[in-house]
Length: 399
Image (cartoon, rainbow, N blue to C red; front, side):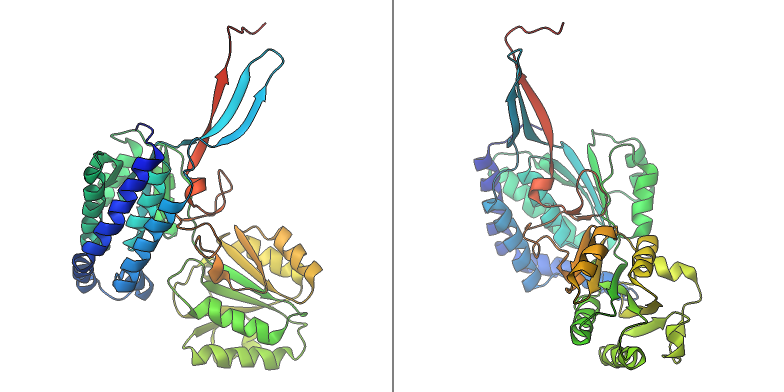
């Protein structure tokens, strides 16, 4: 795709803001068809599927925020002139074509596309079948905005492929693909990594851990745990596992207090063998696979650890490398935790719910990357470009 001037890209986004507001009721009505057809056995997936007035406002706000951000393409990274006179300039450049595969959330159809487009990438959207009606009308909104400004609809395109067809497309794409971002659960990520023939940037599952140190402020710990677990269970930044240091003063009393608080929020509690001695009425973990599981539900595992090192080792073995937190009043201990836990975002005395592009100052996000290349954490506008070297000479040859 050709490089577009910033002005034309912003005109498309301005049109899109108007169109989303104009088509608000039609978008909500289309979403109602998806909601009515959805079987509510997966509450987290159902929550992600909902589009209401508030959600449309958030879509509009996301487009507007990206419109006002600086164009990330063509930004100079470095500029140096060698002794032989060659001027070497490294600048940001589009990836080309990005495919994002995602489940449920129709708002991804807006956020992913607006970021990719502003960064001058063509984007292919493969949403889940549960959001088909919602995604179709949102795609039409994009196409209207593009055509109003004289651009091809090919810049933003929804793929209508079944699972087997998607598998074949990943193996033998019918058009050039430069990057694939799977945004969903472990099965989706494994599916894409197994079949893709181009670069894959993983938007990992959550399975987030929080460690309560023996030097924690207990009131602070409880507030953070409740928020991280119950604020939005469908978020990939929600809390799944709590590790409590057995040397915490009044350990047993505090564990029972935490149980009472969680039960008031209707949280199902699982415990390890050691905590089961205190909370004997709760189910004890029998299957080791639960330690790897992202719950996406009002469900929390509470376990006992002996030390900071024990907590770090447990988190690095089982977590999804998304977000991890420590509650402690000891800053040195916090830094040791944050340096050694292998996660995209590490927190000291704060909820994991802040691992979000908007909350972290990035703006709209394509996903939260748990890969280490080329970027880790929220994939915002500035992260949807690669780089390119421009070398200016005057007949130089290498000798």
